[in-house]
Image 1 (spheres, rainbow, N blue to C red):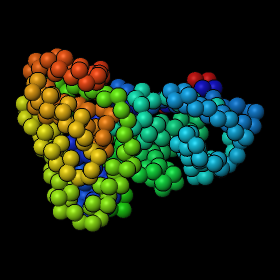
Image 2 (cartoon, one colour; image 1 turned 60 degrees about the vertical axis):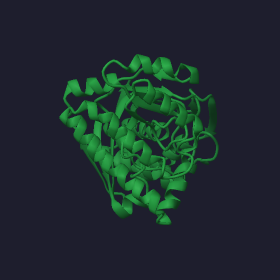
Image 3 (cartoon, helix red, strand yellow; image 1 turned 30 degrees about the vertical axis):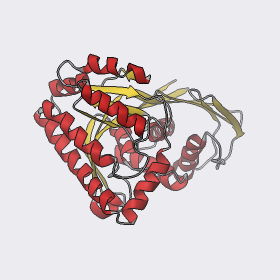
Image 4 (cartoon, rainbow, N blue to C red; image 1 turned 180 degrees about the horizontal axis):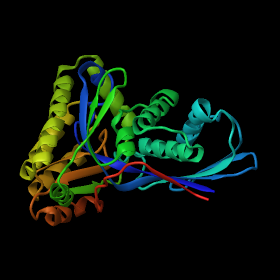
Length: 341
């Protein structure tokens, strides 16, 4: 028997950071995101040898353990072990013996939600194996609890829901972990135009999102007026972006992104740096009308909106920074699992 699971990564189009407590608890957050055809993949092969073999194939991390109800979550495979512990505790109630292989189509810290998407993928594989009746909200919330509570990892809540639901979604975040996912029915031609005009670049440097998120959280807790007002503006940008895409006002999208990026830089130190600023200004001088970093900031994936026929000029202008354009397409579906007997 082979159990397989895959979940899509996402790009945050607008509203990023408003899903992080305490802002979302105090004021309510909203985010517009879309999943793309880069995935977190999980394979489980049941065995009967009393061992648990874990292998993150993209990272080269391997660990073989004796089967047990609870695994020590230290080390580079903490996500895999953390999901296992929770699935045993809440649903399966007995130790298992198996091989697990994982991979993600983007580097860690890339800003595309890779860690949370991997957690969703692993939950999906266990649910498929034991036929656990979890709905989309159940899986996403469970993934959030495993990361934020069980493993103590800092972050927001959009990634788990994007990976589980898939497609274009406008998400609302409230206190007590309440999340409402609103799938958007975007006309195909508008989605195609967005895909053509939105150019995704990998900067080649990962960032530690937890540190940036901690600074953001601290600023909100201290009622830093500049950071708070900037976050309010970012939430408003998510509403504007939803309107632009649904109504097909494609020429206005770049300006919305630009205003959102200018506000995002005010939330916390480390979101931008001199190199990122230089790349951004070069992009604006070569056809882009706006852009932003996907995720917390500091590096990873940067994307720009390049209307009409400006994308190739932009790509050429950024070659001197050794950043590479990433081919992608939007996906309409989220988590997918299956079993081969």
